[in-house]
Length: 169
Image (cartoon, rainbow, N blue to C red):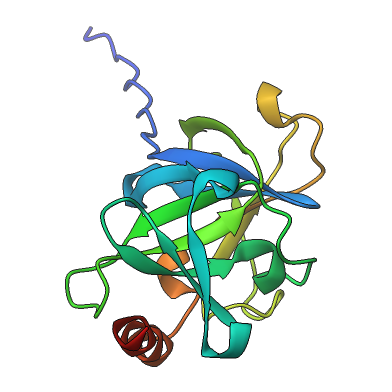
C-alpha cells in the first residue's frame, strides 16, 4: 500500500517594508521603493507655490516633497525624516519625498486586511490595508498600522504641476 505524504505548506514570501511613525499610527512602505532616508534637520528645503508645496535637496537633486502627517490629517512639520521614494520612469520627476516621523525598522510586510476605499481621504488606493502592530516587537507600542502605496498618494497631474514648479524655482 502506497503511503500518502503531506504536501509541504507553501511559505508566503513577503516583501520587506520600512515602518515609519506618523503621529498616531505606523505606516508600512514597500522598502523596494525607498531610495534613501534623510534627517529633516540636515536636509535643505524650500517652499514652492506660496508655501503649500515644498522641495528638498537630496544631495543629488531638488525633488518635490509632501508632509505625510499633514496628508493623513495630522499636524504638519513635525516629522524628523524625509523618505525619498523612486518615481516610475514615466513620471516627470525621478523621485519625491515624504516627511514622516522616525523610521522604526525594516521587516517583512505584515499580514494585513484590505481597507474599503475612501476610509481615509488620501490618493485613490494609497492606503491599501491595515495590520496589527502587536505582533512586531518594535511596533508593539503603537495601536494601528497601515500599508501605504506612496505612488498613489498624488495624481500624475499633481506630480507634473510640482515638477514644473521645481523647474521654475
